[in-house]
Every structure is written in C-alpha cells, then in structure tokens.
Amino acid sequence: MHGRVVRSTGSWYDVRTDEGGLVPCKVKGNFRLRGLRTTNPVAVGDGVTIGRPGPDGVAFITEIDERTNYVIRRASNLSKQSHILAANVDQALLLATVARPETTPTFIDRFLASAEAYRIPVVIVLNKEDDLLTAGEREAADRLQGLYESLDYRCLRLSARRLGGDRPDTRARAVIKEVLQGRTTLLAGHSGVGKSTLLNALVPGAEARTAAISEAHGTGQHTTTYSALYDLPGGGALIDVPGIKGFGTFDMEREELGHYFREIFRTGQECRFSDCTHTREPGCAVRAALSEGRIAQSRYQSYLSMLQDKDENRYREAQ
Ligand SMILES: Nc1nc2c(ncn2[C@@H]2O[C@H](COP(=O)(O)OP(=O)(O)OP(=O)(O)O)[C@@H](O)[C@H]2O)c(=O)[nH]1
Ligand SMILES: [Mg+2]
Ligand SMILES: [Zn+2]
Image (tube, rainbow, N blue to C red; front, side, top):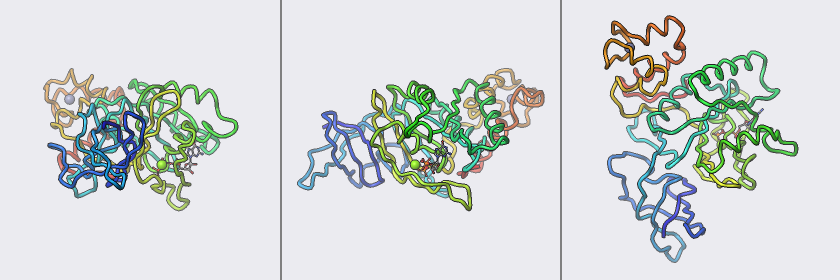
C-alpha cells in the first residue's frame, strides 16, 4: 500500500493511505536513508510504501518516495545529526512576532537563506498584529515588513487569534486562504509565535494544543511536540511542527552562502572576484552597497553570522 505520513512522534508514524485509511506504522531499526544522518528517517509529508498491517494493526514502512525537498534543523548543539521537520512542501509560512516572543532579523534571515538553498518559497507572516502591540512594536513590524518586501518576499500582517472565533476577520481570512489554497505549507517559527493558533483557525476540528507565553521569559512553552499534517478544507494542507530554536548551517561552500541572500547575490555579481565572500576582499560591491545603505546592516550581519558558524561548524539557537 502507498500513502503519506501525516503524523510523526519520532518512533511512530501515522500514514494516510491513498485509499483514505489511517494506519499506524513503524520503521525497522536498520532503516536509514543514504547519505543523510538524521534522527528521523521518515518525516511528515513523505510519500511511503507500507507493508500489510500485523495482527496489532501496525504496519512497517518499507520504502520512501524520492523527496522533492525537505526542511531540516540540526538535532542539537553538539550533534552532527539533523532532524527533518517536514518533506515535500510547496512553501513555508514563516511566522514571526516582534515581541512575546521576539523573532530577531537574524532568525528570519537564517530561515530565508535555508529556504532559498532548498528552493522552498517563503511567505512571512508578522503575527499578533492586534491591540497587544505597543506603538514601538508596531514600528518594529513596519521596519521588518519594509525590509523584506524590498527583497520581494511577500509579507502579511495579521492576528491569528482574530482569524477564528465568533467574529473572524474575514478580509485576513480571505488573504491567508488564497496563499494556502491547494498547497502543502509548513508552519515555521519560534515556539509561541502562534503556529497552532493559525492552524486551529483554518482547519475545523484540528484542535491542536496552544499555550500562553511564559510570563517570566516572554517565550513560548514548546507546546507542540510532534509534527502533523492537516488537510485544509478546499484543498492543500498545513504542517504544524514544534517551534524552532535555531539552525545549523546547511552544506555549502563559503562563497556559496551569498547566493542565498537575494540582494547579496545580485550585488555580488559586481565584485572584483567571482568567489568574493564579501568580508575583506578589495573591490567588493557588497560592502560598498552596505556603506551606501543599499544593503541593510541586519542582513549583512546575518550573513556574517552564518559564515562564521560555517567556519566553526556550529549550531546556533534563536538569535
Ligand atoms: N495576541 C495574540 N496572541 C496570539 C496570536 N496568535 C497566537 N497567540 C497566542 O500565543 C500563544 C502561543 O500560541 P501557539 O499557537 O501555541 O504557538 P505555537 O507557535 O504553536 O508554539 P509551539 O507549539 O510551542 O511551537 C497562545 O497563548 C496564543 O493564544 C495573535 O494573533 N494575537
Ligand atoms: Mg504549536
Ligand atoms: Zn564582495
């Protein structure tokens, strides 16, 4: 039988078969993907072939379809292993909030660069756009929106809380539905930015757990603990995942990193050296653009931090 993994807890998988049934599955201990050192060999979104269920109703996953893409994060600081958050996604919705919790530009940039590398389109959602924001926070959101729209990223501002409930914001609902229609979308972002709240507003019956931000730290509480795929009414699906703390750097050459920052790539065409890393080289068009204000400091700082992590082979949390 063939199906798609719709839920993964790490050792258990729920597979929706092409016929529409839901089968609990496991993988054999020696099941490993060629060349990928991951903590989970199978991920939500994977197309899989499964064997005949045993007397206990559990089947084994015997084969994984070739992936069109996947999104990974490093499993931990010291480990070289990766964790696949989701496979075969059409796009990612990066939820970000300027406060409670704060999403830094560096976190946004690292996500955008990784997504460029994996060729996954990203729509940025500045969430919690409601009376909770102070005037200063609203300005911070304005600046983020201005920056990312200038780089041709679509940037929506909304309140996931107001997407649902008795008196939903119908205009915002229409916009977000149009973005999600017919596509498989990964919901990404720190713990507490409102991924599960957005999901619950759009998928009747999803009833994903949500929890208030910690009063003491202003951070999320890592409420969602496993990845799951939910069908959207009208076509398409949302993948809700545990909040992301940070990223490792994906495999690439030093001079390749700049390719994943759109404006650095574009401007870098005019650098004197074709393998310019935009750090110390003479005739660097990127540093010239930076000093003239044509490239944002925050973007360049994110670029440098990723370059440094790559050199040190590090994993970085949150900031
Ligand atoms: N004011 C406001 N609060 C929101 C909004 N969206 C979500 N929240 C609140 O933020 C808190 C965290 O929301 P969740 O949906 O659990 O966040 P999450 O991103 O799924 O978090 P993890 O599962 O831990 O990764 C909850 O108390 C939500 O009610 C919003 O648009 N406005
Ligand atoms: Mg959640
Ligand atoms: Zn350069």
